[in-house]
Image 1 (cartoon, rainbow, N blue to C red):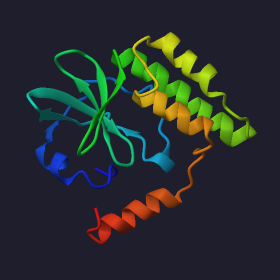
Image 2 (cartoon, rainbow, N blue to C red):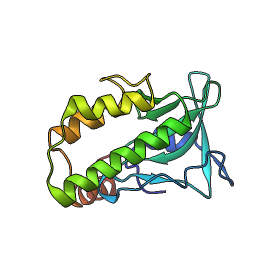
Image 3 (cartoon, rainbow, N blue to C red):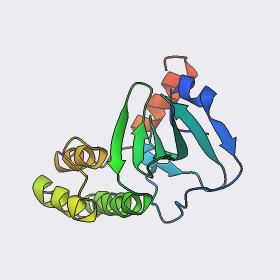
Length: 164
């Protein structure tokens, strides 16, 4: 499983499930941010008594669906960031985001933070500026995207050298 890079403690605790419990076939990938979704095998992960179904990842974090509530989170070594109320709204937001990234790549259009965040909040009213999508929209509006392949190469190099 590559990425996410690092996360050695979490990776040791993952229990592989030879099936797709969370249907993520309609999610879009983005190699330069390590965004991948697991369609053949997914994983169970427990933290603080809460069980998550790990169904995808970014370059340094996992996407997990909370079994108890159905909410989606981005799980890192030290933090858990709220994404969406349901997997359905997660997939909708994920597709909107990647489509906007591709639009920026293709047309060099500038993204207005407030307008795009409002669009995400229309899909899922629980999204805030501090949630995963609020942060992603900020990064996109501040032209952190498109990312180049260099970020993947850096993390591969760091992991190979034992740096992460």
